[in-house]
Image: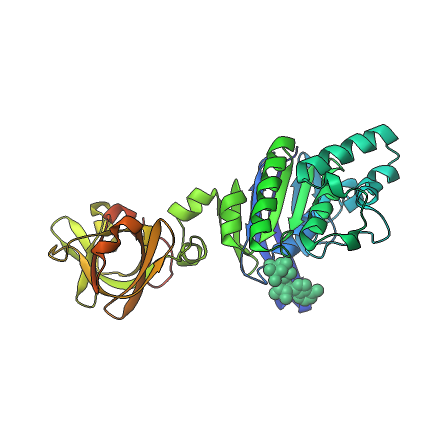
Length: 367
Ligand SMILES: Nc1ncnc2c1ncn2[C@@H]1O[C@H](COP(=O)(O)OP(=O)(O)OP(=O)(O)O)[C@@H](O)[C@H]1O
Ligand SMILES: [Mg+2]
């Protein structure tokens, strides 16, 4: 299965006034499950259409495996049907007059595959997707979730070398979404087909992806594994987009005491990592704290920050505690067994190594 590399891809509309893609660069490895993630309008669909060959970019080049499918000078352009790509759009359209089997077999019949091979493929993919008992029904006799699985199956039987999915689970309820997501990931692993999956849902991206390409305004903000983006976000946008509940941000001044920096907001202060001291002197910073990185402390602990509890949300084995410190509403995630330690007031600490420190002006990560 091929890798995909995209170089300086730009798509301009309105005589260059709208840049749907602005110098996009990315690399997807052979067999990877890659997720394009980002807010509405950031260019996810546009990038997918360029890779599929359904949209010719203003400039830039794309390589699929060893083959250049569009070159910078546009002298090379491989037509969509020659790219061996299967794409599933959010607005999947099944042929209403055909059965599920007919829908799934259609592309293979067009390619004049032998009957037995078509049946074998359709049955095997239908089994994987759990729709084998629906093969003789028409689309109108299916639920939305079943239809969406048929649309996926129709793309999968074609043995594509690249699988492009644009928000393919958008019409499913939360439970079915989770189920189909799991099936999709399992099938992708089994077939080893390089896959690009578009979503604006960060939970979906975190659970599915080997690699996330996080986009904003037609640009790549950061690409890497879900862990990379979660643990080392390169700016406040990435930190705020990835992770749920959302990371807490605090604008701070910095002072140095002994060998370490202290982040000050109002009359409260948090110790930072000694390794950062030299980089921070006199700077205004934004620090990011993941809700799960707060640890409960004793009210008598002088190093702990203290807040007023506004709301406790039970989440089964965990609790979310919303608390106010110096006019900042923060959220912490704790073990439900520790609920007794949270009263009207709460004291918390953060491991200095777990603080995310960003430049107060640019929002870029410092460290
Ligand atoms: N034909 C067009 N003419 C002008 N602008 C366009 C055109 N197609 C897309 N755009 C603009 O390009 C930008 C990127 O659009 P795109 O459809 O790629 O976003 P997206 O990330 O897929 O968003 P969504 O999550 O809402 O589907 C948007 O600002 C959009 O308005
Ligand atoms: Mg889109």
